[in-house]
Amino acid sequence: MIFSNLHLKKYYTVKETFINIYLCILNGGIDLLFRAVYIFILLSIYQFHFVDFSYSPFLYWPLLFIFEDLAFYIEHRVDHFCRIFWAVHVTHHSSEEFNLTTGFRSSVLQPLYRFVYFLPLVLLGFKPIDIVFMYSLTQIYGILVHTQYINKMPRWFETVFVSPSHHRVHHASNVRYLDRNMGMVLIIWDRFFGTFQDEVKEDPVRYGLTKQLENPHHLTKIIFHEWQNIGTDLRKKLPLAIKIKYLFMPPGWSHDGSTKTAKQLRKELLFSKKNAIPFK
Image (cartoon, rainbow, N blue to C red):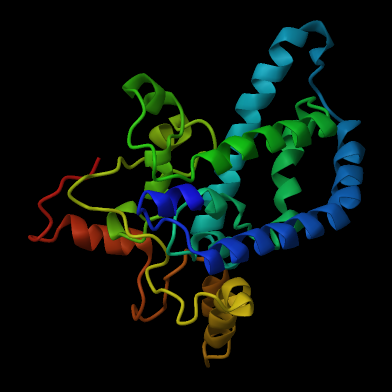
């Protein structure tokens, strides 16, 4: 923060920084309280694993890294494409700043379900304690890419790994950038599954949400505002099937087209005559 202000770069504000740290503490507290439960579940499932790595210990850690990173990508993609999970994850995206402390801006309730994505890894023969350890290591990398001080990494690096530029795109509210670059360490998942988008100079990143919070420093609103929006939609006089869609369809979905998903907005931009900047 001091370095940023000395260089006249207003990347940090005191209030936002303290909010990010406080959200991190809340997330960590819930994680510690719930850890015994999900470790017990993972250990119970581990006894049914069907792969034995005792014959190939040198493959164990590289494969754990790859599969854990893929599991995170899947979790992250679900968080963005299923509204009820977006209601949890949106906390991380609601800041209009982007700096190292944004990486600490945790989705407070995520520890309650994150372990579900580790279940396939346990069945593949990876030990629960090793999975948690690897996840912690990759989380450190995930925090470090929250920076505006690094422009682009070498091309070979950006082909394989998530870079600060890639993650700036992920935190953008520009239509072009919505729901893109969801990898933690490896960007290859985004390239393979069609969620990759390069940072485009002609379309400077705007951080935050497509509809910014009226009070961006109100802690309860930061954590629960999307749950309130879901409640509003569920109270509408609509068939049950439609109400269920308001829970599980992508954020922005509406039965009457009054609001739009990122995919719909991107399609409009793609076919707009005003859009002269190609998608990448």
